Length: 281
Length: 331
Image (cartoon, rainbow over all chains, first blue to last red; front, side, top):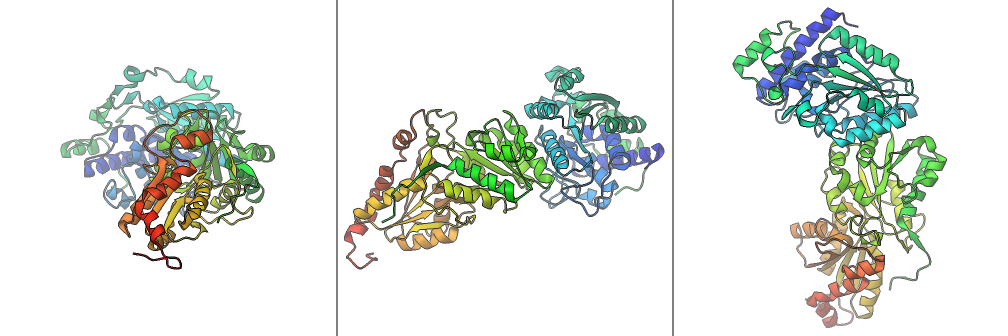
């Protein structure tokens, strides 16, 4: 277990990794990645019970995590490296030819910690539901965690999965929606409004929790609350309010930095805003 | 002559149901998912005997494929069941990303494929599924020909680690393969040896090709008939060996010409030993409502069409006619 200060230091390093990875190849998705740095850090260091080495694809008798909005791969990869799935030096290969760190997460190259490919949106929750059912069949009391984007909820498959999980009381599943209210073309409110999501999930039989996502202590409290709420006949979803680009002032609060990379000057500025480091890769 | 005396007619989907039930009894990791078509897919016996291993997905095929990928990740061997149309085109991206690219051990089992679905019409008569599925890396594609072969294939694919597309159909169809056969993925089955032409047939069209072979033989044409139940991986060796002997080919399948068995055979031959090929398949059309046999005839998939395909190649017929008795090679 990490202290809040230790978590904050890891978050700072994860943010440094994100901007450096994306800068190095001048491609990738920094905005959503930065906004989820606290969530990933708390999840992998203080919430989930897992064994990174040797990595088990099946994840029997451990907690497992599924990322549905695969484009935030930089925060996923950095978090997996800091969780011990692979050496952080491999982050330098992100998006380069021959790398295990594909633009969007994939299993084909055998990167430990990845259990399904994602990137084409809307598919992760279904996979998480299936994994949760395999745990029930195996009498495995561990949890399945899943993260989805909010814009991604425009994909109909999510609502198939939400309906299924509610009807079938898949209550060993803890889903989180990164509710940053941004998508590529603008705000989710303008494009396909979700001013609120609570009533939608509740209507499908889910237990809905709210959480401030850019504060490690609130994330830890929120995820622990979700664990306590699980196994009670309802799937659990956390509506996690985050700010896209959090931690880098010029990227914050805008969809503009969804999928573009900082230049040299912007990189220097971003690193200066996140000075705590555990050693860059 | 091939024995085409029909002892029994059974639907291939019932072969799937019987195979799945047997798997349920022998392999505790096998689970089944169905999208509101349990009766049509003949999954009811499995559901009844193993309710905890059966997942009713509702009319939500995309989620069903995703859940199957998740169950496979957790170590289960999921068999999904719905109509071929909803098993492929409707969920192509889900299969591509969550199953094929992610190398998940999911068995996509698809009934009511092709024209023989009948009266429901073209919305449901998918004729593109073999092509869609064979294009996906990591995907094995199987189209068995009768009840017994479908049952054997269902059992066999549980032992293959990786994604499989298993295609079968709705109508009662002659049962002519052995009841307790061992199904080997990717291994062609030579039904009859011959010297003038090779017919490669898959699915329901194998029976039609058997009928056609007998008529052709009565016309003096020696047919080598080979059942290609596995479209991918294709049994390259068996195909090339046969064509090296007969030097000309007819393919027969209940599918579009584009993307089907004929397409795969042509690719193989053109890159190795080019040979003339006639394809008995649907020629870039959608089907329509009607009885299975009426539809097969109207869309060029009848027994007569196979005979015509062989005779269309004039030199095939000439070769047979010119062939002095006792000699098999005339040119």
